[in-house]
Every structure is written in structure tokens, then in C-alpha cells.
Length: 557
Ligand code: ADP
Ligand code: MG
Image 1 (spheres, helix red, strand yellow):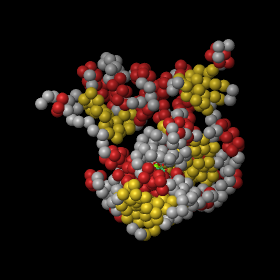
Image 2 (cartoon, rainbow, N blue to C red):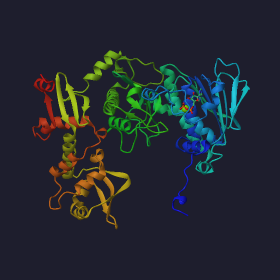
Image 3 (spheres, helix red, strand yellow):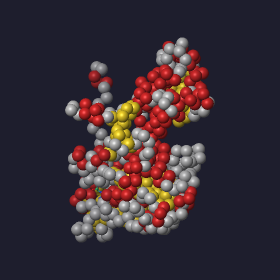
Image 4 (spheres, rainbow, N blue to C red):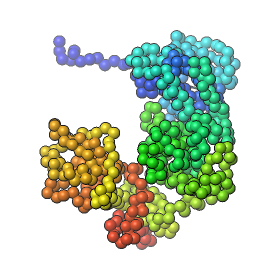
């Protein structure tokens, strides 16, 4: 036999198998089916969604809605892969107004279950039904307007997946979590949940502040709502609204943290950081804030087509969004100092009021809110207008403009802080979730033994393994914005005869571009400003004021 004959043949996967593989990405458990089916109902403008589960959803899931339905002749198409009514072209992806757009959910769900779909658009006299037994056979049936999708025996034909399912209670809890999450996204839609024929959740549609607060209380608990601040911050092209816990209320875990972008739940590092930053120093160590927050932005500036489950997002201007969120929350918390805890007319500022059960909102006008919002930063450098070239912050304080070299400032700031910490022995370390293993060059390994004591004092926890690689267990928390691997590798390149000093640490930090989204620019600006006032001039090289002559030069006048 020749070598060529031994090659495996390439063949196209059968549709069913391709769909089952794709299902692996989005359908992990009953809760993921529910998420997809509810998203479809919401995209179909439903005003009510009914969910029925059998045995935690593992034996049965039925989602019924009163939305616009699916035409009988398109029913079979709806369950095929890459079939969607929500986008037509790649441009539509840049301006999404629907939760779905990939045309994969129904195909994936149907490929791993026994299913039945009934649907009736308003204009169609009879409802139509198709089932897994004969997917192309359309049957007439009586049914109200809307769609009803029933899934039985999830993962019946993919036993490996089924094995990963947990106890009924656990699966049920996941399902309930998804429904609650969706219910906090859409207050105008009613959600009803039945588990093994028992009504377990009843959320009526609400359209006013009282109703919305009541729904939040139903889902997040009375305690949260009683100790929350209601915010509503409009910005030129964004709006942040919702409920935040007062610093007096905190939780052991991050279980009550709901963040939505244009009605879609999002878990995002930049946003989490912005919120954590706003609560920094206000919560006891190890405690977490609780919130239900909605960010409304132009869909064109956010890309949700990053991950099949659409839980992640990418922003065109993440810094502006980060700062807007952080500042709005900080401002809201700031305004609720203890003596303003009682709700009354005067305490309502800038779209913030302290929630007191079912009181009505009293907001200032949008113009007043914006005017205040723009004045809040009193620092010499004022507000950050934009980040230029990913490297410079352009800021404005009244008529003055400043350009701040973020790279230089970050390096200087971190190295100064580390060295001050070294003197006062107050450096905080951050354990890495998973220790990182680095392979060292001979020279780096030799340098390691020289520098290890200093690195430890700086907040690193490193150890050399038997096979001569380095295990990184902790890094100084100040260097969070730097990639720890490169940071350590570069430090170990320093000549063994020189000690690690503020100067060469600064040089190493400068060479590594930090992740700016992890830095609190406002803290940094304050640091630069205060060091300048004490005329130590440490940060003098990091910023300059833009003069009219500069502008003239740049504009070529
Ligand atoms: P996507 O939501 O990404 O478009 P799906 O596979 O979830 O893909 O659904 C395919 C299509 O079936 C949708 O684009 C929509 O036209 C239709 N559809 C699915 N569920 C419903 C529903 N509950 N009501 C109306 N139409 C639906
Ligand atoms: Mg969908």
C-alpha cells in the first residue's frame, strides 16, 4: 500500500452531526435552552412568556409566548442551521437590535432533543405544528397567536452530554436563574414559571417605577431594594439606570450583580472593573456590591458577536464607557452620605434617589443632570475627553487642555507606589487564580537567585521548580494592569549586579504597555497633580498643557 492510501478521507459531516457539534457550544444544560427560547420570544415582541419544566428541565421544557409567530411555510426553515429572520447582511451585525442573530439556536436544540413546535402568526387562521418525528410535515392545529416550543429528553442522542447534567434541584436552579436574569432585562414582559406542575415564579408585566422596584424586590430580595440607590444617568449618547447597593449593604459573593447592555446580560471585565472601582475602599475586604444596572448605548459602538453565547461584548471606546459607569456610580454613592438618607425632594440630585420602598422617582431635568455631571471633576486636569493613540489622555479643565502620557505616568506611578510600599512594608499581593509557569533562559534562572529576595519584598511570590521553570503564585496588586509573565521575564533580564531600584523598575514597566482598562486614571491624575504641587517634579515629564501655539502648530497655521 502506498503512503497516500493510508491518509484518512475527508468527508462532509452529516447535517445532524454538524448541528450536534454546534450545539456543544451553546447548549450546555436545560438553562441554556431556556435562555435561547426566551430570547426568541422577546425578539418576537412577546408580552408574556410561560415556561414549564419537568424534572429541572431535563425531561421537559416548554416555552410559550404571545409573540408574532412563525409562518407555517417557514417552520422547517427556522430549525435549520444559519436560518434567521434577524439579519440580512454583515452591516446589520454592526447595528443589532435583536437578541438573536446567529440562526443556530433552534437547529442546535432540535438536534439534541425530541421536540415539537407550534406557531401561529396573527394573520394565519390555523396554527401549524412540526415535530422531530417528521420535521418537514406541517400539521394544522388549534392554538392562540404566538409560538410554543416543547423539548423532551434533552441530550437523548448525546449521552456524553447528558452525563454532565446535575441533580434536578441544581438544574432547576440554573433555569430559574436564567429566567430571573431575563426578567430583570424586560420589565414590560410577564414571566410565569412552573416546575413539575407547580407555579414557582409569577412576574407580572410592569410599566412604572413602583412596579419595576417591586419586580427587583421579588428577584433580588426586599433587603436589597430597601438598601439600594436608584440611579438614572443620561450622558450624551448613553444612559445608565438601575439599582445599586449602598455601601452599607454588601454580599459575600457576586450573586446579585446584573449588568445589561441594551437589554442583553453581559459579563465584561471592563465593566466589572469600573463598578469595583466605584466601590473601592467602601466595602469591607472580601465583600461584594449588588446591582441591577442597564446601560443603553448606540448598538453600533458595541459588538456582541464575540462568543456564541453572546455573554461577552467588545466596545469601540471601552475607556469612555468604563469611566462613565465608574463615575456615575461613584457620584451616586457619594450623594447618599448618611445625612441624606431620607428621601425628600432636596435629596434627589442628578438622577439619584435613595430607594424607599415604593416612592415615586423624582428626577431633575436631563439638562440639569448633564450640567452637574460635567462639573464634578475638580482636579487640575479635569475630565478625560478621550484617549489618543491608546497612549495619551486628552483632558480638559475649563479652558485648559492637557495631554498626559499614560504609559509614562503608569510606569512612574506604579514604580513609585511600589517603592513607597517597600519602605513602609505595605505592598499588597494578589494571588493568581492559577499559578503561572514560566520557562527561563539560563541567564534569567541565574538572575532569579540574585533578585528573588527583592522580588519577594516587592510582592511577588515565585519559586523555581525542579525542571528549572518558574512558578508565579502572587504578583503585587499594583501591577495588575501589567501582564505578569512579561513583567517577571523583563525583571529577570536586569543585570544581576544591579539591584532592583525605582529607576530600573520604572524602565521595565515603561517598556511594557499596561492594560489601561485596569488602571484608575482618576487616581493616577490625582497622584500626578499632588506630586506636582509638592514640586517634587516626579511626574513632570508625564504631562504637558496644550497651548494655543501647540494647537496652531498641529493645525499647520
Ligand atoms: P436566531 O434567533 O439567531 O435568529 P434561532 O435558531 O433562535 O436563530 O431562530 C431561528 C428563527 O426562527 C428566528 O430568526 C425567528 O425568525 C424564528 N423564531 C424562533 N423562535 C421564535 C419565536 N418564539 N417567535 C417567533 N419566531 C421565532
Ligand atoms: Mg435565537
